[in-house]
Length: 211
Image (cartoon, rainbow, N blue to C red):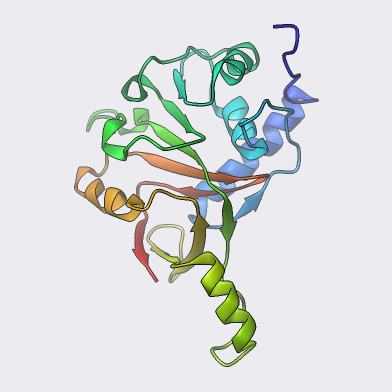
């Protein structure tokens, strides 16, 4: 395609920077991480999601995408990844619109759980609750909570006590889907949430509740 966007400006250094960001996010579930060195990617692919895919996808990892032909061509050229015909056949599943259900993705096997799918889910925003005690900045905090809606409380490996995260734009039944895959462990789908230039990771080891 003659209008193919260039991807990473420096494929080696930019991919290394993005990989460190993904590694930090996966090791600290729910922590919001910004990616500094971003690729130029076609709409509707967000910069963070584009960086994740260029960093993790390769010739051995089929990718399924709902983002259209321009994104598929861009991924094929820059990542060299095969394009899966269904979400179930993919190692990386890119959802820029309505996400496929987690139980429609490959959870891996007990012998090879590391080959489970990773869902790269674009959302409107990722936010952490405001700092301060319950009496601090009460009116501002109330407006902030109304904007963000119900938050998530994360516990598990990589989290000392609990971590709180607000996600705007996730599927309304996402937490129910997440809890439903818990009995499959060590199998299960990992999720990377992307909003603009930022991401947060939800490895399958983490437990998520409202709160």
